[in-house]
Amino acid sequence: MASNLPMSPQLEQIHGEIRDHFRALANGFQRLDKIKDSTRQSKQLEELTDKMRECKRLVKEFDRELKDEEARNSPQVNKQLNDEKQSMIKELNSYVALRKTYMSTLGNKKVELFDMGAGVSGEPTAEENVQVASSMSNQELVDAGMKRMDETDQAIERSKQVVEQTLEVGTQTAANLKGQTDQMGRVVNHLDTIQFSIKKASQLVKEIGRQVATDKCIMGFLFLIVCGVIAIIVVKIVHPNNKDIRDIPGLAPPAQSRKLLYLRNQD
Image 1 (cartoon, one colour):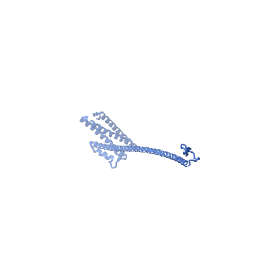
Image 2 (image 1 turned 60 degrees about the vertical axis):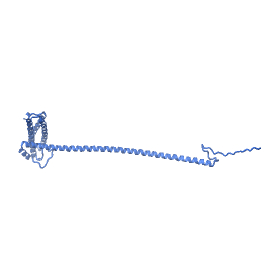
Image 3 (image 1 turned 180 degrees about the vertical axis):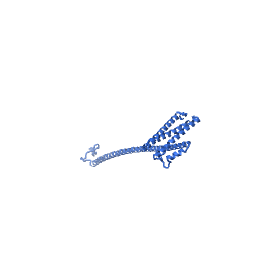
Image 4 (image 1 turned 90 degrees about the horizontal axis):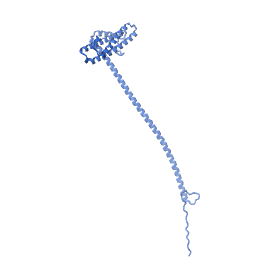
């Protein structure tokens, strides 16, 4: 019946994948009856759970594609496709109930489908779920399945938001650390420049000190020379006839006194 439905290539591909998973689930539960070891049974149930999760994803993808193509299909075709979708959801819920029954047999009565490994206390047991499911209509089963899918999607979205917020905080922290690292590098470079300037200034101060000391020595020698010259000049003026004192080069000796002779003519 489903193969005669008018579907687009995309819908037909998704529908075929869902049917393949359903056949794999049916064969898996048949093999599960033949397994006696509880460890192997648990492993087989985990594999079947993964297939049911994939079925759930494909059913939701089928529903999205169906809504996108709803305007291009006739009302009769849309009704047939919606009936097929509800049939697949009902079949998936039956495998969910069957899985919970096996989990109850294995002693774990509080594991939910699509719980991602998180158990919640106070949930109804698998046997109670089977009894409730048997008393529900097809539409109620479809609504319950869609509600469970929506709850799972909301939990996944919340997890994604937490991951995105964590990544954002990590990125911001990394940017802040990089900025602080760059700032510390600039501070270190500035300190190196200051230290180099201080060293150059110290060398300049020492050089200036040496020059000042040299200038003072030269000035002292010049002062002594000037004092000596002045002393010689003074002594030479005071005692001009003292032969022990040499004449200063460039300085003329003191003029000797001249005597004028007057000749008186005799008449």
